[in-house]
Length: 288
Image (tube, rainbow, N blue to C red):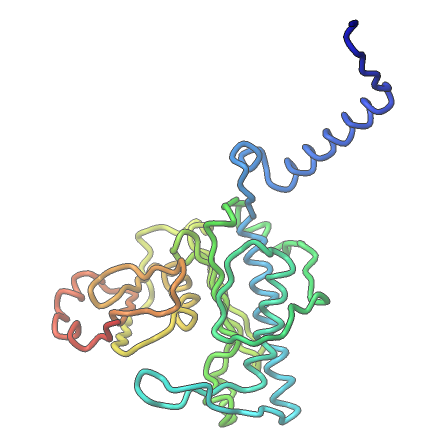
């Protein structure tokens, strides 16, 4: 029996070639050649910084809206390790929904950890246009990182107790971007002054011999969550300071929200020389 033949039209072959070429071009333009070789999805840290600023400011708007409408609906969501009530308000939750929705809609594959949790669905109307502000483009070089190496920490309303007491100058919204457990981007927004501060470690041309104008020290020996400290850690490191546990270990921001072992933050001081002079503090740090 003669072999059966397969007839394929030239039009279909051409269509397949065009579709394949188009897909390759799309993947290359979006993720870069290294992403194609490894199969990893990558993102420019400048995009993450731009989105972090937008998210922090969007959360700040929510915090102001709730405060101005006098609809805080404050309640205790539990007790802290020290036995105090841990407060949550409508401002915390609305800020959480807006900030997490922005990140989830833009980069759905990236690990996202927020202080607050609720059952509300992601708000699909909150989107970002992927535009990087000119100031960021001109001052920071592009750097692509794998999405699987990124953890985003969100504190949708820091200083909730002060928020309920109308001490608005203490209130912030914060975003931290950690890569492989190290805090790289820190964004802190003050909703009631509309100030937004940020630093990007390793993307700035920061010399190791930078000497700050003054020395400072902060020691914390009680239990603390990582969304409270990650953004500050990134900013501190970008300014030439250090933050570690009391034992001198770097804090890992890859996953677990609990920070054990206390923390010591310094700037303008020999950090490790200081730690050697604080041996008694190790007994005060919380253990899990």
